[in-house]
Length: 250
Image (tube, rainbow, N blue to C red):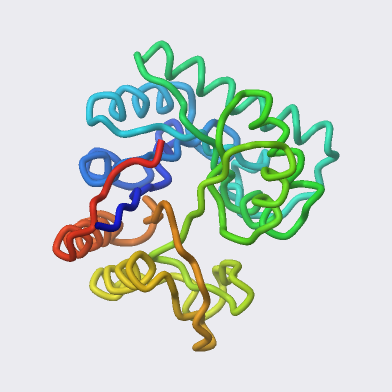
């Protein structure tokens, strides 16, 4: 029987600004990538999210980003390696401390947004994230065959392969830019069908029709995607119906 983790980017509210329906998502996913304050997720939200994850038996991953609150961490930035190292270490360490206070632990690191896309193709930036993960003894969640996978292998860091059920892919296996047609899939049935193909057939159709290999250990459904709860429910139902065990990788 196939087994896959189901993760979502959660804890992305900030102050008076609410993002997504985390209460519902925590009942559907097995792993939660929690914002650490640089793109979203103020301290109170981080604490509440850690408590909710503990309550629902959901594993926690740190979701560090570029320092970009205004752009939700989705704008690419040129940050010196030593500064980026400190920024990522600061974010993950903050969540580690807050999780401990909530009676749980951080199990892995998954970069967010533009940083995620950058480490997929830029080995120097990927090595910065891998070094932080190595120092903290945490695995990294990311795209298969990417620069961050190479950096983790070189650093002796455990690597977990991820696929995105609700995002379009380019033919090279990277995520389609959000402004491109087909970059975001919001129909629950279409996302569920893609998720099943990813897990069972281990392929996904790119936006140009090319079939690319994925073979995920974890599937992501974004918490801020329109209709995220309905999408997650459809994915979970499809996996359950096909006899796929949904369980945290950590």
